[in-house]
Amino acid sequence: MSRRLASLVLLLTACTAPPPNPATPAAPAVPAVPAVPAAPATPAAPVTAAVSPVAPSEPIVSWWCVCYSRTTAVGGEPLTACRATEAACHSLEKAVAAGHRGMVARSLTHPCEELKAAHPGDVHGGRTAWQASNKAGAWRSPGTCQLPGEGELVQAESGPNVMGEEALGELHYGMPASVAVKLVGQPSSRGSIEMEEATGSYVQSWTYKDQGLELVMAAGTRKGSQTIYMITVTAPSTFKTRKGVGIGSPRKDVLAAYGKLRDPEDPSGDQADVFIAGSIYGGVFFTMVADKVSEIFIGAGAE
Image (tube, rainbow, N blue to C red; front, side, top):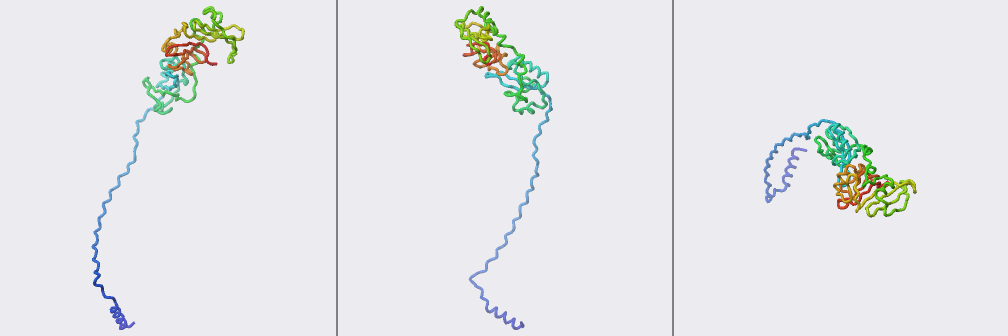
């Protein structure tokens, strides 16, 4: 394009542009907002690993432990007891055999067993299951045997023959009928002779009503020689056992005389309605009413 033609175009453009609008003032300039300086960053706290307090170490030692039953008002209760020495544990075994206070005689089920730990509960049952024993430096766990295995009554076989050794007056288990008649006379009534299915013996009841006495006689055959098989006395009987217990004797006298003779496998409780010395399979049964003896039975309560 020629220089003259370019000048003509510029002039034409300037003439055709709209004039400025005086009613619309120009917007005032907005001053810039000064920037707020950022807060200095807080340094992060150093991370410290949690450290659990360390209990002082406890030495590993030997414990000697047994299981037996202790006496309660409702029956025998299993108990685990641990001693710090083997000798002390064997002394405990002897105490159980003799039925020292609070122990069911001959009730040992687990003889002395050694375990190595700072505390018996670290091996058996946990520490919360154990209590400090009355014996210094010893532990016990009532209500259960903590030692492994079912166990068995290892002292019961050497126990007394309560049924065989007991008597009421002079009457005792196994006495010939002829001797019994000499002692207490003829019965006021006799029952029929019947065969006892459990034993095959032929049994007959003899009743002495005025003496509060009943004898059960037994023989190997229907017409065989009879011997005393069971003895029962109630009021007004005056017969007493060889330990001096009779009808009307207080419960405390029974426990004092026969407490150590309770069945180690199923021991009678101190408050039982019927206290059994010996075993339900053969022993002396004391029935209590108002804490006094109302009946005494010598014989087997079960076959």
